[in-house]
Image (cartoon, rainbow, N blue to C red; front, top):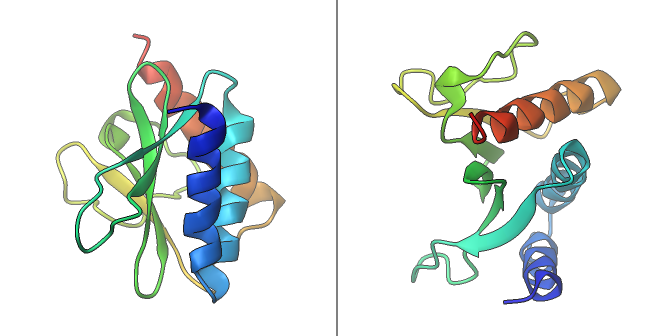
Length: 131
């Protein structure tokens, strides 16, 4: 599948949301893609309940993936427990031995400082895949 085709599929997932969650995912995607030029976008885990699949960002392995939930947009980092999170972005899946996630709600801060913190987290996650 071409990069352009995957990008269009992720665009469609974003546009499918008629509320704030679509625009939030669009904003988060922009920050994620700005973090590391080696990142590639993929669609994984198509299932009957989610035929469009899940947007995934990889760089020599999974970096993070996005789920649109009922009340939030969740970015999940499969190796999150190994990441340094000095800004305290992780607020979900904290009891997992490996995974950490950031749930973004309607009123979540997504300003410049939060975007910079997310960018640093994505860079760390990508770099971890090369160790």
